[in-house]
Length: 131
Image 1 (cartoon, rainbow, N blue to C red):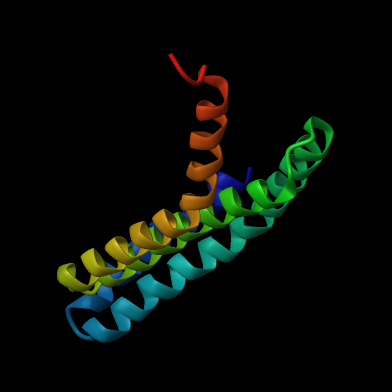
Image 2 (tube, rainbow, N blue to C red; image 1 turned 30 degrees about the horizontal axis):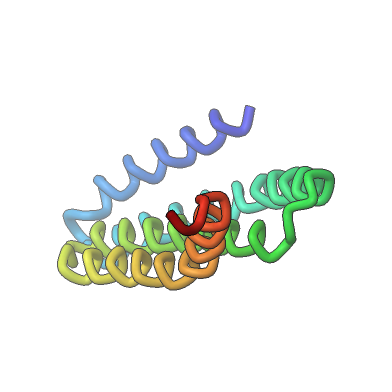
């Protein structure tokens, strides 16, 4: 099971970081950052499978691909912003981590505007006009 490998890697890295941190804090941070990056790259292949299934479902349901692509970009921004902010937070830079999260939220909002517009137009089209 892959989760056992991931947890095992995380536990071994954590022990190493705790041992090394006293003598070489920069090396300990780099070890933690590279461990996180390795885990991220390990699971990125799984995301491709999910994207493929979602694309098939969107094709069968007739949903325009632009909406699926936009939602996937939003999810990607959320994951990357969270990952980046956690690494920066591990380095003790809480204020920079907060700015990364804020930037991620703004980029998500920008990407969501077209979808929100379509939803509002659809709702308005369903409402009876006039008195």
